[in-house]
Length: 244
Image 1 (cartoon, rainbow, N blue to C red):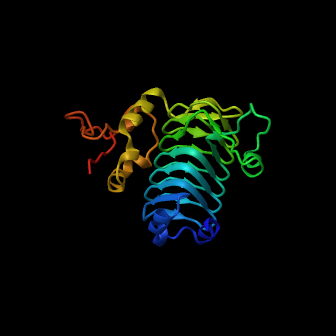
Image 2 (image 1 turned 30 degrees about the vertical axis):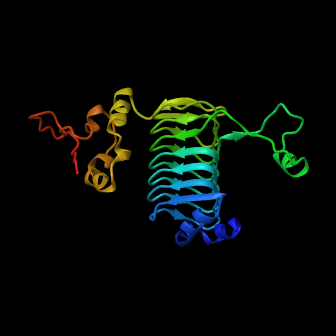
Image 3 (image 1 turned 60 degrees about the horizontal axis):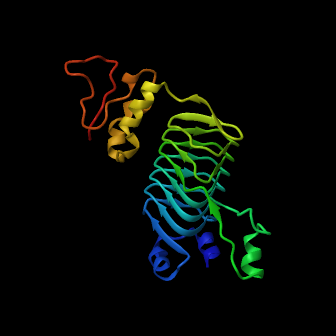
């Protein structure tokens, strides 16, 4: 049945029926989420508003994809994996939370299931957690227990074995930090701002902020609820800011 659903693109009209009658699949899919045909879903899958899964993506386990996040073709999210809002995941990326045990005679789970009828437990170093506004390059691999901070960039072909700090740019095997996206004071202001939590009306209302390059801390508006400029300051260098 799952193969047929994959071919059909998991039409929204049958999500409720699947959740009531299928133990292997529980879907929470926002109406504005887009699933291409050829994706395969297993386990507990939560897709936020305006998420997009391109063809050939496999989501298996306890998987959450945040609002506005894009997965390009042939990405695998296996195990306990959470992606934040507005992430850009390039083609052929792998998020592998579960792993094979090494201390028994065989490594193959299917041997234990089908021949020995006993099962082989998987191992894990913990869930994979990806923050918001993260860009992960093509064919990158993120392994068990890794947390990737907001705004980080993972270079194509990297293997990420350790946590990545917010707004770090990492690359290599294993991945190491090669630079920061922004200086420390701009990073701090962006993390305080948390623009990825805004609704789309507010994002649109603050388009001047998103259209500019960030060179100095003043290029980043204050967090929600604060004035856009210091009292009495009418400098044209300040970013227009709306609290819509």
